[in-house]
Length: 316
Image 1 (cartoon, one colour):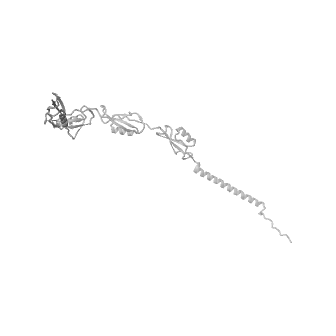
Image 2: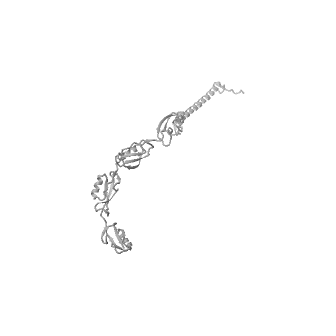
Image 3: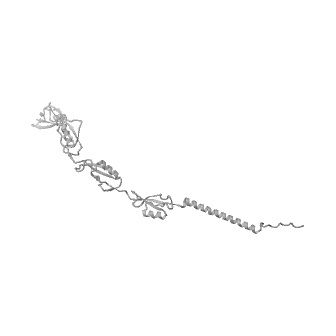
């Protein structure tokens, strides 16, 4: 028998040189594709990182540092610096009060940080208010950042009534905003209260008004030694010092309070005294003889005398 014959391998057979070249060429292409994919992914990752993170940094903490220190720290981080200034009661002058963005905040690598640097505590000067009406003086203090404190009044011949004589602290003194300034306000030149006791009511009122005072008349009249319808007493009293426009109160007399004198003749001294004092009189005792009995009195029993007046007793 004849052995079967194997057909010869053609040019593209498995062992041909062309077949090996095709296998090597396919592997190289795959590596190129893989490499390109890796590079592309790396580029995409880098881009994402840059967009989301790479172009940003955190704002350094510079609060309470000096302006110079804070500026150096920020510029070392590649940031620009802008400075504003403000008053602070807490942070020392020349030190950083605040930053924008705040410390730890995200900011672009080339961004700008605005620093607020302390001017120290705000200081204002007390204005010169001499001769200024009180209402205007209070307004000027508010506008200066201060407030009116205690207001006292004093006589002053050179300053118009109702205007400021002086301030405490004085004009030009440096104070913190909101500090209180005490004011002394003029009552004008001092006026002496005239004596009008004993004058009729109408004349007394006219005299007081001409002297620069206001007048008030008490509703209730009183018994007094002054005649009925005249001034029994005044407040303030004569000779007192007052200001123009002050009020003087007048009390008008009902005349004397007349009381009947008890008859105490032939009574013992102590009994007579007790009876007279109970009726509203004072007692003066005169002893002519050794004894204890009233034999005479003045005014006499049954007569009328002003309440509070004196009754004289003679004893024997």
